[in-house]
Image 1 (cartoon, protein in one colour):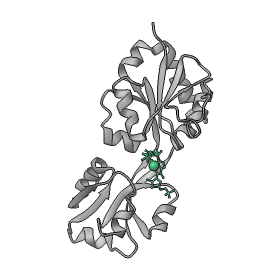
Image 2 (cartoon, rainbow, N blue to C red; image 1 turned 180 degrees about the vertical axis):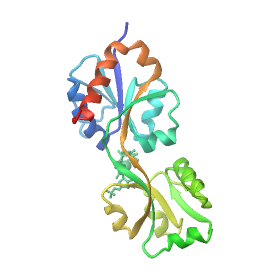
Image 3 (cartoon, rainbow, N blue to C red; image 1 turned 180 degrees about the horizontal axis):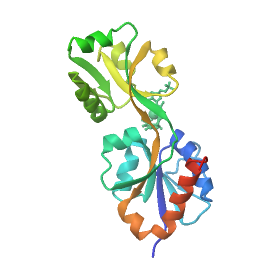
Image 4 (tube, protein in one colour; image 1 turned 30 degrees about the horizontal axis):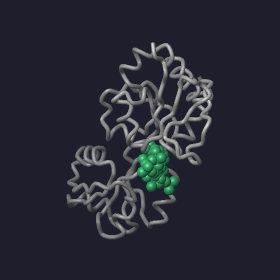
Length: 217
Ligand code: PRT
Ligand code: MG
């Protein structure tokens, strides 16, 4: 039986923060994606390779079985919908929060109270739609793919829904966080078929990730 495993990761914080979990499973990635142009990286385990994809593409690769497992933010998983994915563990990495932010001086509370129609720019249209619907706030959602912070500065929108970690990006653009929608961290996602056909190889790695992601237990 073919027990070769492909792990999908995105470059940057998810790659960096997954490395210690891989090491806990006895796997060392032997090339640095920031230095190499390769999209398929070997590891110290000949039966495990890493593919480097866009953060928002991780669930798609795993859903279709092009990768057996991957690591993706809750933000990305909520927008993707999670079809075909088994999500066994919250890895507690790449943590941040999803928030509503507005220009300093914009009276968000009274705009919401007066039932004004709010223009909201965001990459996270599904989460934003649900959030404002639950509050009974009328919104026009404007889909962006990045640099949401610019929206209110150039009159594209009244507000944004974006990820915040230190808050320095908001501050640098004179925006203030007015509402926290949810806490975000990254999860391990596993292809449902691979979980059955490659269990022997996959389960010990999932278990090692689980133990390493909650060292208190
Ligand atoms: O960058 P690219 O367009 O390729 O994709 P991506 O932005 O989805 O990938 P990446 O690697 O930047 O983020 C991967 C995952 O990390 C996200 O899906 C989140 O789950 C998680 N994460 C954790 C974050 C942050 N923290 C974060 N701070 N993702 C993005 N940010 C951005 C945020 O969008 C904002 O622009 O950082 C800025 C805010 O940071 P502070 O520290 O200034 O508040
Ligand atoms: Mg990014």
